[in-house]
Amino acid sequence: MRALSDFLEMRTENKTHLESVYCFQSQVAIGPLTAVAFSAALHYNIQLGQDQIIEFDKVITNIGNAFDSCHSHFTASIKGIYLFSGSLFVGGSHYANVDMVKNGNAIGYLFANSDHHISTETVVVTLETGDMVWMKHRGDKIGQASIYGHTIEQYNTFSGVLIHQLL
Image 1 (cartoon, rainbow, N blue to C red):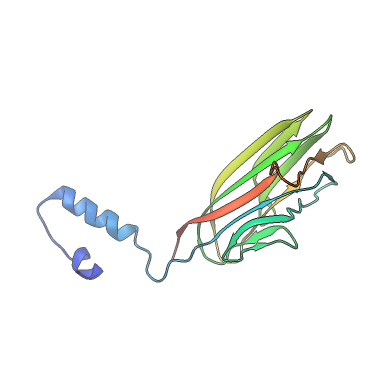
Image 2: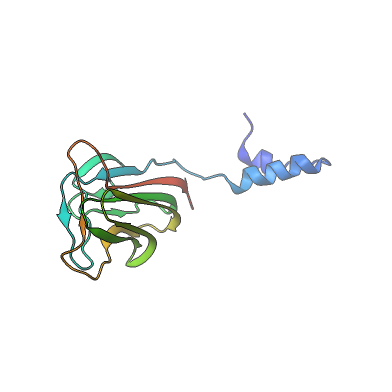
């Protein structure tokens, strides 16, 4: 098998071939690739206070151990491009405004109101090593915001995965 440097130094008259070599060069990550992925759910009902972090108590997947189940936040162990997804479900006559947060700044928004309303959000972001992502309540009517958890069905979830490692 040829070395990467052999491919990068190839010269040819064929423009299509040169484009594919350039594309190959720009997408290569040097070093071992690391898997990072998590998924967590809420299995009990909670009344939300102002800026309260949603504590997802049921960890489904935590490859790479980047999700802290005690504090319900994700910490990037690798610089890269990540995909995060969240779902929000309210029951009864309640509502909830929830932010997906990166280092204290909202990067996604979820809103659900009235009986059996679900909201979802998916974002793709670049994270540096040590960046943190979590979900928190943003509502202003304390006592009226409540989300529904269940021991079997996973309505309220927070998940993330490393898509591509950056150097």
